[in-house]
Image (cartoon, rainbow, N blue to C red):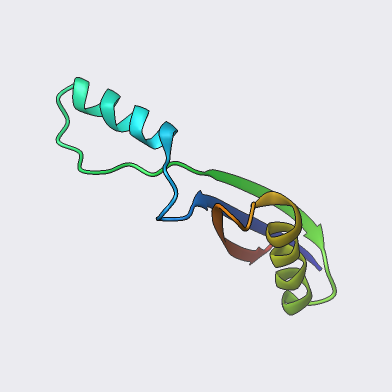
Length: 82
Protein backbone atom coordinates (compact mmCIF):
# COMPACT_ATOMS: atom_id res chain seq x y z
CA UNK A 1 0.00 0.00 0.00
CA UNK A 2 1.11 3.57 -0.63
CA UNK A 3 0.96 6.24 2.07
CA UNK A 4 1.80 9.90 2.34
CA UNK A 5 3.35 10.96 5.63
CA UNK A 6 3.61 14.62 6.53
CA UNK A 7 6.16 15.17 9.28
CA UNK A 8 5.97 18.54 11.04
CA UNK A 9 9.17 19.56 12.87
CA UNK A 10 9.12 22.54 15.23
CA UNK A 11 11.42 23.88 17.93
CA UNK A 12 10.45 22.77 21.43
CA UNK A 13 8.56 25.49 23.34
CA UNK A 14 11.51 26.18 25.65
CA UNK A 15 13.93 26.62 22.72
CA UNK A 16 14.48 30.08 21.27
CA UNK A 17 13.25 30.44 17.67
CA UNK A 18 15.25 33.24 15.96
CA UNK A 19 13.47 32.71 12.64
CA UNK A 20 10.09 32.97 14.38
CA UNK A 21 11.24 36.15 16.11
CA UNK A 22 12.27 37.63 12.74
CA UNK A 23 8.90 36.75 11.21
CA UNK A 24 7.14 38.25 14.23
CA UNK A 25 9.05 41.50 13.80
CA UNK A 26 8.27 41.60 10.07
CA UNK A 27 4.57 40.97 10.63
CA UNK A 28 4.42 43.72 13.24
CA UNK A 29 6.30 46.08 10.88
CA UNK A 30 3.46 45.78 8.36
CA UNK A 31 0.92 46.65 11.03
CA UNK A 32 -0.33 43.22 12.04
CA UNK A 33 -1.10 42.63 15.73
CA UNK A 34 0.66 39.28 16.14
CA UNK A 35 1.47 37.94 19.61
CA UNK A 36 3.87 35.09 18.78
CA UNK A 37 5.33 33.16 15.86
CA UNK A 38 6.98 29.73 15.89
CA UNK A 39 8.51 28.44 12.69
CA UNK A 40 9.24 24.90 11.61
CA UNK A 41 9.44 22.68 8.61
CA UNK A 42 7.15 20.24 6.88
CA UNK A 43 8.51 17.15 5.16
CA UNK A 44 6.16 15.16 2.89
CA UNK A 45 7.20 11.58 2.18
CA UNK A 46 5.44 9.04 -0.05
CA UNK A 47 6.21 5.51 1.05
CA UNK A 48 5.19 1.92 0.50
CA UNK A 49 4.19 -0.12 3.56
CA UNK A 50 2.16 -3.28 4.16
CA UNK A 51 -0.21 -1.52 6.59
CA UNK A 52 -1.08 1.83 8.12
CA UNK A 53 0.62 0.77 11.35
CA UNK A 54 3.84 -0.06 9.50
CA UNK A 55 3.71 3.25 7.61
CA UNK A 56 3.21 5.18 10.87
CA UNK A 57 6.10 3.31 12.47
CA UNK A 58 8.34 4.18 9.51
CA UNK A 59 7.31 7.86 9.59
CA UNK A 60 7.91 8.03 13.35
CA UNK A 61 11.34 6.52 12.84
CA UNK A 62 12.10 9.15 10.19
CA UNK A 63 11.26 11.89 12.67
CA UNK A 64 13.13 10.34 15.59
CA UNK A 65 16.30 9.29 13.79
CA UNK A 66 16.79 11.83 11.02
CA UNK A 67 14.37 14.70 10.51
CA UNK A 68 14.13 16.12 14.04
CA UNK A 69 16.85 16.82 16.57
CA UNK A 70 15.40 15.36 19.79
CA UNK A 71 17.30 17.87 21.92
CA UNK A 72 15.67 20.95 20.40
CA UNK A 73 12.78 19.77 18.19
CA UNK A 74 9.37 18.21 18.57
CA UNK A 75 7.72 16.48 15.64
CA UNK A 76 4.31 15.14 14.70
CA UNK A 77 3.15 12.88 11.91
CA UNK A 78 0.05 13.03 9.73
CA UNK A 79 -0.55 9.93 7.65
CA UNK A 80 -2.98 9.21 4.83
CA UNK A 81 -3.40 6.47 2.30
CA UNK A 82 -2.47 7.50 -1.21
